[in-house]
Length: 356
Ligand SMILES: *Cc1c(COP(=O)(O)O)cnc(C)c1O
Image (tube, rainbow, N blue to C red; front, side, top):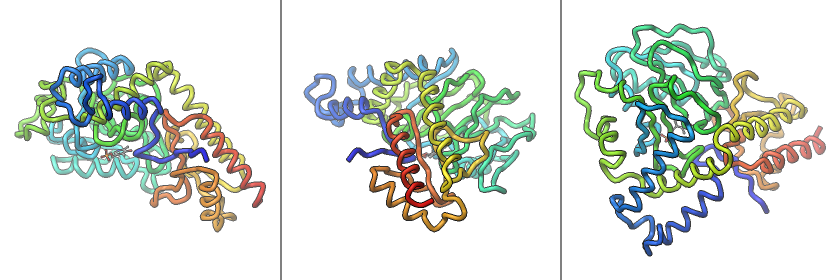
């Protein structure tokens, strides 16, 4: 049976990425050696790193004056690396979910990290609006897509202080204006590559302004100076990321992805809104295009486990909601084909006919 992969992360990757990486694991670049056993200093791998960096810049139209890094440690390490490198005394955070809360917690280790607004009052089911950002903060941190709760900030902000964004789960899902950001970062395992590599896009001139000593490995300048090769980079995930970047380019780039993502997510949200059994969990204007959360309608609550079984029997994988929301979450990342969304919608309709 065909499996439809709705996992939130690590998650579905293009078949192109999986096949090319599998081939390179057997024989990389006609070297007669596996990608797993070659030096990261070989000219063949340096070419992979260079091309990945160049394609990242091309696809996101990254302006001059920015660096692109591929690091280890996950998005979670960036939660502390960012304040370590750019927070003098004060920073500001928008608290839109678990990941944002974790980022804020690390900021507090370095001085006065302020929560400017939070949607915790309603279990993070909306994006707070109309808050004030302190003008004397060194940066403002946002999480553009809240993977667990299914909310998303759909526009690039205009603010007067450096803007820092965790884009772990929506990078490459829509065109962004990188010039509005000082740092964009994320774990690769949602929309780009297998886990193990973290991307960081940063504006070079925000560095060098803090007085504290920064450990070598946590200092962005170390990695900029050595083109992400100060120590051994995650070779296999970087290779896989390059394949996804090529796939993005071959498939019309990010604008085309956005069109498909809008179409796919509308299809599923329309069914959630139409179907008597289900209801969405977040404010409509803040609905994520990447992680679609829904629960059973109040009067059908007891059917939750049964629908999960039913959907699983039809090949739907990974649709259990995160424990902090319950119900269901279908992640509809770039690589998820329309066919999988159609299959889930058909499954929801069929179940409604059986039960309502
Ligand atoms: C998955 C995720 C993270 C954590 O990423 P790690 O690479 O596991 O540290 C952080 N932020 C968001 C928005 C995520 O979706």
